[in-house]
Length: 214
Length: 214
DNA sequence: ATTACTAAGCAGCGAGTAA
DNA sequence: TTTACTCGCTGCTTAGTAA
Image: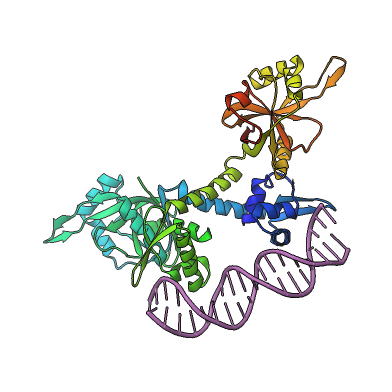
């Protein structure tokens, strides 16, 4: 990968470049033998194509190599450019119907409409995320989102929640985090329509949630 | 670096994240011991800071770590985003005064003004580039630049050259490549003013040339 | 000059395990 | 459960060298 990056920086994405294994070795701060081996490996992986002359070789990055670089680039982009996006990958699970009870309640529904700009379909889409991604939830909580106030009704208190506008498998919606009870690994999503139906999803299906900050 | 990237993707740039060496190992497809060692290394390099609890550790990327990631990101940016820029790093060398003779010649000077949009100070700033960067010159030639036609004068032919608008240590200018004679490792720069004087440069000083394509 | 083979040496990996 | 040590083994690196 490091080698591929170095080749790309020398212009090997657009052109054949002339580069001896010795020169590459210098660039990578390693030995000529190792540099030569790296090139052989990239060649085997079909990430570069080479024309070996007697005294020089021409190297160009193939589409496979270019894709690998793009993936890497994409990661860094996510780190720096898209600090206003947080991506979760999880899978659909069934709740116990309590989402419908809560989100359908006027006390929440009115606030959702006012603060989120859409009338939420009653019910939540529950997405089980990887345990490791709990750190991203922490990130969201620190960042702060759209606050939905607690309220009293039916002789009890309905707790406050924090919402974040999000895109769920490409559809507009939001995620809902209870103000209390940190560290769940299930994200509850609401949306203007019944996502489970419009996206024709079943339990276990992969769900990508892109949370839009700010 | 790979580890640091992974931590950043989990949000460790903005926050402390909770991550066991075992979890990190899964993420990196390696053993718990190796993951633990990676974290120790990053800690030693002061790229991350850790709070070691008895049953969990909190990790955050430090400014040093963040800089390292930024550098990496910058490389990829250069590969993908800035394909319309080519960066050379070299050092100032002395020519033999012939630059002044040529660029001062009306046959060239008039074309420079017309095609580049500035009156070139008579004389060239010669920049010795790394041998390995000759590939970037090849890239430029393939790309095509601003053509300056050959002309007859004083009983001889003055050969055609190809120019590229460039920024030389932050100053507006251009580089001049002879149409013939490929593969030099000296770039000749022209500019509206005497760069050597305005930038107070001497032989051996580093020069950054950013060529603007298109 | 090159590239790249073989072989030896050494660094990094992970199993086992302590704290 | 954790983290991280020791240590044996594997595989990567590089010196030497052929083509």
